[in-house]
Length: 367
Image (cartoon, rainbow, N blue to C red; front, side):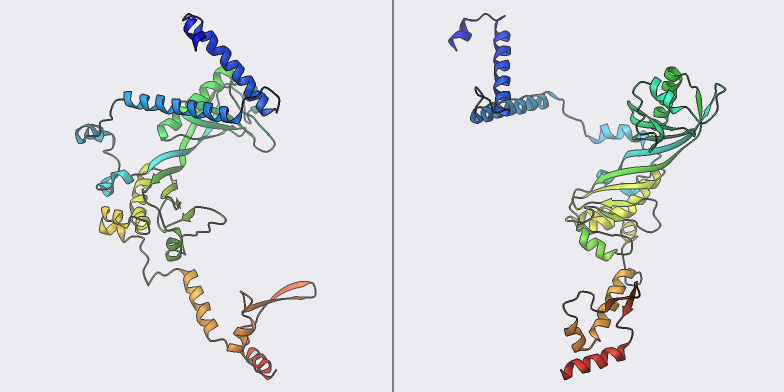
């Protein structure tokens, strides 16, 4: 400390730099197990001090940021941008409006400089900056990534153009236009686009409550499936809807399948009340109208087929004689047995012939 007091202000950065160099060498010696290494206690103390300093600097940064204005008068100024969107169903649940996070577009590229299809993808990949052309035998497309808008455009040798990663149709058109400009300026290949269309949209939403996926899948077994051992999410494809809900127990959901944002909003307004009914906060479903809450609610007349099949199997096993039940108790599938005959595997239904089973049961009781 006394040496630092005697130093001039111009020498302090140099001393700090030399100390950092020595410390880095000591850490290297600790990793490769050499002498003159820093001790683990010193390393932990230095790490804690650095992390605490980063937290303090982050809190200071947050304190300087201006407070976001969320008043009704300020938010109403943006109403003109949502006039054409079907938000009437979300009148009391504006925080449950899904957000468009990904979009897949499709278009056809036609050469304008007299060249013909197919495109020379190797030439385009070599000349275009940032182009990716990896494993052409497996995936015959040149990938053109962009940061603004954040997207990736794929150009196939047949002239098909696929855009991914955008969050709006306008951003997708801009990404395709940037790709055409890059191909024309760098590779000298001038093309035109026709038949631009959006083929898939993916929305995302956080419901703010945990979901009971097991109970939901049992009540909607015809349209939903939940197996946490194979996949942590629960895919649900409600009938007569344009989207498919990929729901997680944390309350987050992905909504693929729509081609327009209006379809996404209208479909999710009918799906959300049923999801919230099986959540940790079922009172959130009351924020939607009664008509929307009853759209996908199961009833006795529309019971799922797998649940009926399980019920009939349970009823059939109830009528099996006690001798047979005790005999096949150790086997989960006590109704069926497999037999190899002549090299061919045949499935024999032992419950098909009840008389033989009864005779076998009587014989078993004799012994």
